[in-house]
Amino acid sequence: MSELRPSDGAVDASGEADPRVHWLDDDETAQLLGSLSCDTARDLLSCLQESPATATELSKRVDTSVQNARHHLGNLIDADLVRVADTRYSEKGREMKVYAAAAPFVVCVGGDADDREAFAEVISAFLE
View 1 (cartoon, rainbow, N blue to C red):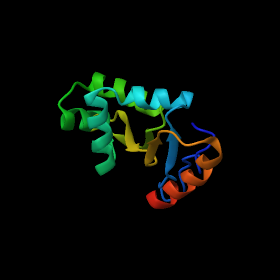
View 2: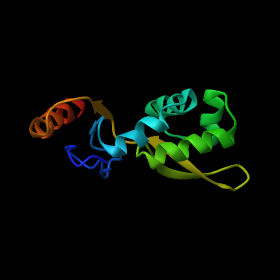
View 3: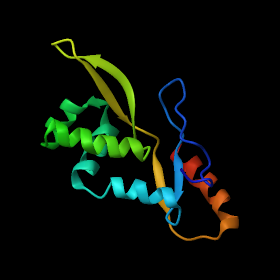
View 4: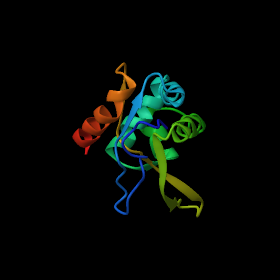
């Protein structure tokens, strides 16, 4: 998302992703914040911080419809906050995506351009 973050949030072989630092004045941060503007989306992301789950499992945990959960999951994926981590099959043999939280992130306000990269590295090291 931001060119000044210390990593690209890439997922390694263990499934762990590098933490990311975003700046409030970056254009792509607006999408990230917009995807979290709804209580349901924040609840879904919180659940995924605890453990990966399917849309059906998540909808039950946050007491919403599967369609609503999928809508918010799509927005969270677009904002790089959630990723598809695996595939499971239902009892009826239907393929189901298993979602997981993406890399931890921090949104920062202020700071001049010269200090941002160093600050991002410090925050990233703290989150690892």
